Image 1 (tube, rainbow, N blue to C red):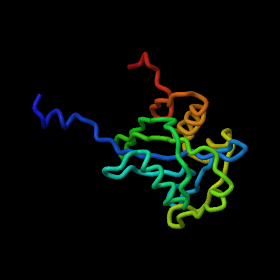
Image 2: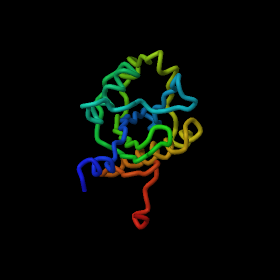
Image 3: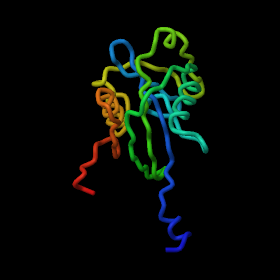
Image 4: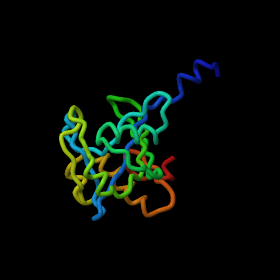
Length: 161
């Protein structure tokens, strides 16, 4: 196969990364974007030459004004989108935010109008289904030693491959 034909078949997905943060009651930090009609988690697109982990750290710093330690990978989600094409999304464990970090949160005003900690059972009420599935699967993965692989926020049926 010619190099150009091979290259044309290769996926060139957009990548995004975010972090899940929790409070002392194990509720999940959700943010209210100014440019979406649903709630999200802190994060955004990975820039050229940037790793997903570094993108998550940068996005948290830009959006919330804090730099808490971000831990291990919880989930990778293959989530192609008709409008944006192929996407691979990474969720990292931000752990429980300290009182100091909570007190230092300063929202990026052109991107976020609010934030709240939500119990897991309320996540689906505030966001779109595939994101809710991704958040809940990643939250569950915190109790396991390995990250979870998802497709559209769901564990794929390995027999379907």
